[in-house]
Length: 123
Image (cartoon, rainbow, N blue to C red; front, side, top):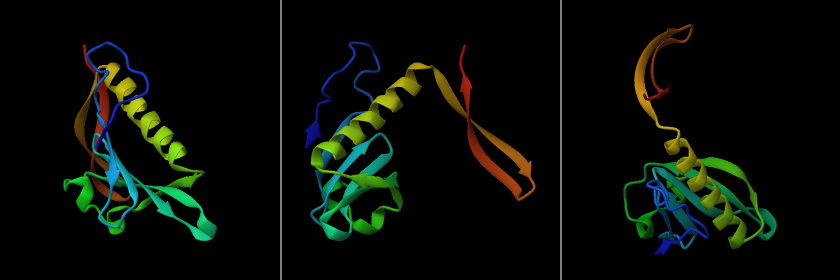
């Protein structure tokens, strides 16, 4: 299932990343926007929380609870979940509009050799 954003800009980045919402193999409400995966997972007392994962390449219907490792706070309901996902997609669109690109950098740190992406403005 693909979820159309409530509002979009008519520019070249408006549709990226696409928001895709569905149900996991475990029956949880899940979503993908770009490489970021989200799940509305149950907490105690009937509450829910927002969980995140990264680069889950399988179809949404095959996702499992074990694919998610980040905890991003409580969710009141399904509408709150959809709002959080759409906010993240909007943030990704805004970052893309900045025209930055990732440059891989190797850096020596006190903790050892580190390879990590850095953002750089193009142009």
